Image: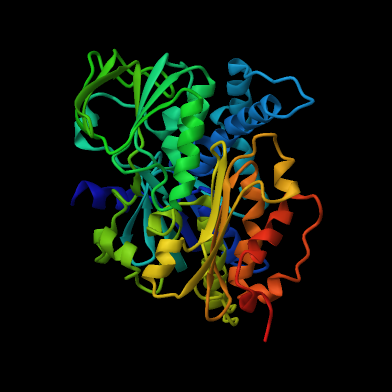
Length: 482
């Protein structure tokens, strides 16, 4: 008998209706919607903190630091106010309070209040609808109806950085020891947001970006605005730069957010040739991948690529980052609500809800200025074969957005199908841009043509008034129904 078989033989056995592997907000939503207003039961299995990456190491801690920084910048650029300053100690204390000092009792209380059972340990599939929980005491759980994989994602670390104990995203959001200087490898959302708060904490930040601009995948003007703002904050940005080697004496994982060894030396190759960059710490922000390792997929005849392609048996679901869909908490929670409701309907014999096709994915980058977008970029719409009309304006094209701060730089753009008049995508870059993108999401999901949107009257002088000149920037034949 193998060691695994021996563990299974001696394990406690449980039966439930739904097993959810992963207790982040996505897993919590899946379990809640699969069981609500029914006699169905669910077990959530979590090996770390219930609440997941978002609650402790990503969305929540990053925004707790970025919002005060944003407000401080506003006071420095708004006549009638004396400029606020950043109190680093207070900022990090606010972060700690919002992550509950890395304790999850509140999340446990919520789950129990919702009628959900939480099991601690690492879960792996061992058979159809059957899961082994390995720690701290072996438990085998059999699901009557479904197993949901909601294990999230993990940073991808190129091999050249493995031996230098770099900071990863958790170290950046959990910063304890503020380094005097920091190299950030990457130019995406994690890199841009971390550069914003680390610079505000007093760190000299040097970004090494392989691409031609920041925030690839967004409209090009978004990355340009963010780069300009970061550079004005003292951040050095090297574009089209490849890291060729990385060295560090005394590399050691000294703990979350602590400096991990001696000075880091990076050799790069960029437009100006070879160069050497040194810093006290290095943050590798080169992307994330689904966390599917040691999940036992092979026991049910599956591999990671089957999850990404959606090739799953009818009892197994993947949701959130683990599914290879957009790695955004709000998107994962949305998909969890849909899938949870589908599981409930199948288990109870009720009719499943009708789900709209091609639901767009909204996203906000909480840089300064903020970048908020939904749907297709101009390039994506053209590649998809749409004949398009584009309306692009300075962010200050309305009184409402101009009043947000005295130097409210940015750009707003909508992309519209020239034949149907339907909104295909929207991007807003500027102060509090996050509050402007949801109307675009509603318009795309509701398939509202712009001649109808023209009758959604924005309040004056709210920031939403920016929608009026955006729509007026389109050809008249699109704005008026025939």
